[in-house]
Image 1 (tube, one colour):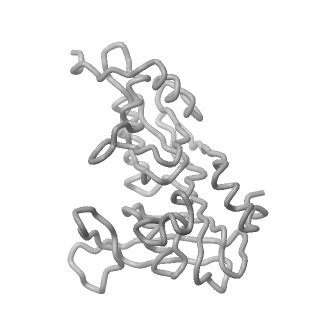
Image 2: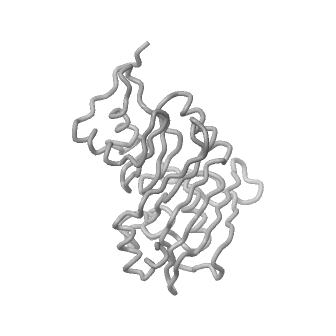
Image 3: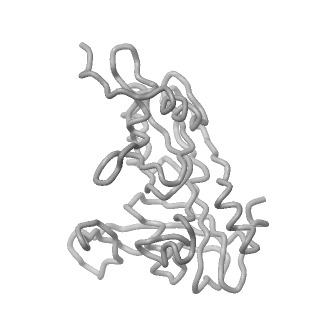
Length: 243
């Protein structure tokens, strides 16, 4: 049985979608998502990575499926399933925390005294001005979810740092709110930091993903740091941490 007809995709958009591919096989596709491209459609989104998946649809009309998200402003690794079994397998990898994600962030403000540690604060989603955001939850608050992020400082100055972050849980905006609550918001974060006063976009990059492959074994995929992220790191004297 064929699926309902897929939306049209221009040749230019199809070529663009293929230019984002880091890896492709019969079960998965791995993309290097640029900052500014939404993963999924919604309010105010005119095109998304999910729309571009039409370029990889099978002849029966079935296109690859999303299994996780990155915020629109975040760049880096996104993996999708090409088949229903592959999608289910990958979704289970994320749900059971067997998928290991590593992020890079440029932060400002009150920097941690140590060079590595753990942030563990429960978070809860709230609505402010019709848009969702996360806040640190008070003990016992209804709807609060435990959130754990491991961190390491790769380079620092008196006012800024390049940090590596490994979230153990996958709450919405987890890294962003954890860093903001610690006094070190990510540059360009319009929700939890100073927004465009500190950077043109959110300086958060999903650098790598290690995950089980639907066809067996574990695999790791890496996305190079974007030029704008590298340029800002260099301007702040933090680029040594990227080597």
